[in-house]
Length: 269
Image: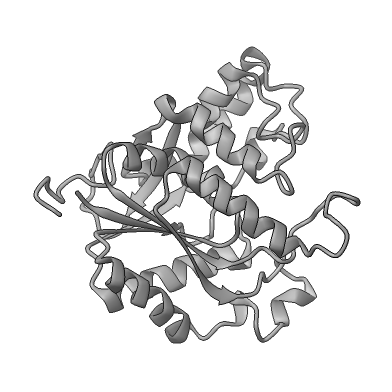
């Protein structure tokens, strides 16, 4: 079987973007490794949520360990950088932030894990980091460079099918999504992810939606039960999250896949 390294910016990103694919890979006998660039130090948290004296990053580390167990990850590792905050905030300028990291140094940290794991697959984000967050953009840059350094054969960019989601927004009332808190309401203003024709790989994770939902719930400091993600009725949750989308870097035009491990072969130990 193969080894896939899922590289994410902060705890909770893995559950949202790739939780179903991670669970599916584990169920098929593949080794699943989660690498986090940061501990999510600058996420938002409601007043009174943390225990006295507890820092947000400490809670988020506990949450991602619990989520990783649900998702079937065999290992959780950190690159050791600090959350850069949203684009344009002072946290971007901190020398220890991931956004300010030296590209080659950060890539070598990740490449060392790829070599140690003898990774067959690396998953990062698309070139805009799905929605422009500096740490997500840096995940793309560092991931691509690290894969080249380590000789990792297949590099995927986790993304969102813009066209599909715009269609969902138009059908929102039909799917029971019209009253979901903080949900997108104007299809023309939805600019996350990439156009559908660029997506090479669509992984059907409907059989793992309960796992994905439970992994999201494990990140309670960031994803509350009343959040956009968890307040969807089941039919809407399936429509929104039943397929996870990826772009295989360097794939020939017209490539269509349903799995991250196509072409790797069953003989891999």
